[in-house]
Length: 294
Image 1 (tube, rainbow, N blue to C red):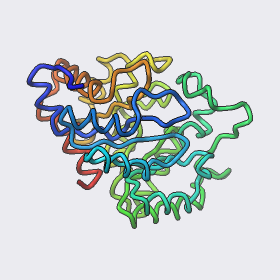
Image 2 (image 1 turned 30 degrees about the vertical axis):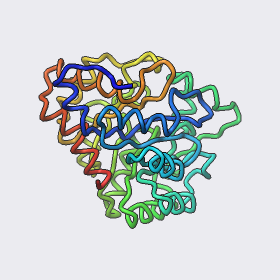
Image 3 (image 1 turned 30 degrees about the horizontal axis):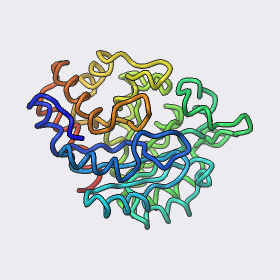
Image 4 (image 1 turned 180 degrees about the vertical axis):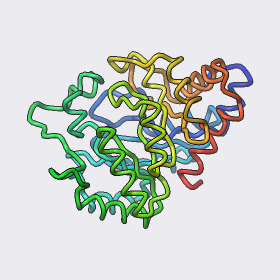
């Protein structure tokens, strides 16, 4: 389905890239499968998409969807327990399969396990027996295995993303990753109420070496237990600047519109908030293309 928007929105949806979408097959209900998602993005003039799954790597299925839809689809791997946690072997093989992004633990991050009620639909698959993952040792330093993972990511010119760990863990990991030579570092939805970065936190993590802050539209929807006010989201984006930001949807849930439509809504609301078309284009097209290397 081709979604209807005003011409100024359509002009920015054309060529946009969404680097954060959830699709079927998944253990959670999803609105579209990989191929349907790719065809929808293609029909609505987008340039590329990246599909994410909390429990399994998505690089292989992304390649299949890309071939079937004749449209660029990328994947990645989240270092949750089902992928072996902080598992360098899983990272290496995912990157060999073409993965573009490696997320630190998300649903199995210790911080998220303890605060899972903030995203109730994700909480359904996190059992009481799950022992959450942390990035630091008892002395507060980064775990040794992360340095090997950093090296593997750097050698593949892939993206390191912070996932759902605490902002303190993320700051330490970003600092060490940057020291290790990583050039593509994304802070995963720092404005989300369950992650709870302040603007000062966001500026600090950028100074520590993060490339982009990823601001997801899902954070303002009823999909999360404590949605962010739309005006607050755009105030944050204005405060940190378009040059440091990526707009993505985190779409795929049954309660939310399809990703291409959701991206159009996001663009429309950004323009209505007073963000210039040039800055929106930077955040939905230029910055995602840069981080993906396309």
